[in-house]
Length: 263
Figure 1 (tube, rainbow, N blue to C red):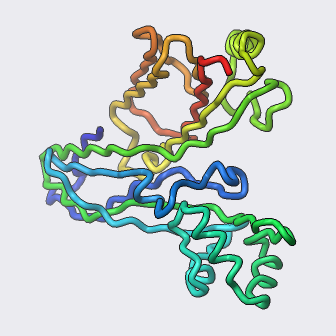
Figure 2 (spheres, rainbow, N blue to C red; figure 1 turned 90 degrees about the vertical axis):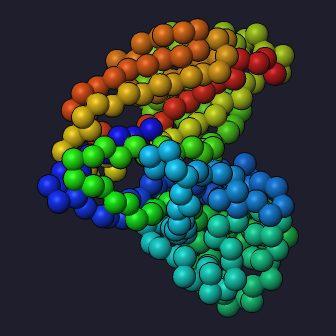
């Protein structure tokens, strides 16, 4: 939930963009894929309200690899960059002619695995945007609601996981909590989910964010949550909150949830 106020005495109309965290197919692999027909749009189910009235934003989707925008190349060969349908994506890649495969391999966009399915290596960047009027002297309330695309994996040994403990500022107590749950789990593994949120775009506004409130709810009292954000205070068995004034975000939010269910 946002409250915007125009810094222009005459008011202003501008394009407002809301970027989703990047979705790295090379890192997430099959875990990134979904059901038949699923897309970034259908998975996130993004909704927007302005002053209580629902609006329909436009979405821009780019495919990036090693900092290069390869969207036009992929779409020119019929590759659906917005798709999370693994069967559709793999069958489309397999149907490409050899010269295109060679280009994708040389550009490090797709890894071809002989008799196995190819691995798409690009990163999906999705941004919702819309034109917004900000009248002079009037607050504009904007609300977003969506399901984040979360990285999900198993933790079997905290010291051997690919994740870096420092990425989530895990305290010694939090690390021990994971180990305790691992020791008690039936199969020696826990399910972890990483949820990211883009904050740094707030630094593009006219000055700092006047008042910023962050609420993190871990769902179950027995679950664990870790993130790099100072000042969070526990306000319920599952909820942590903090408020900052004149806040200028310098990094994105990365939140790690560790399932409480023994597996």
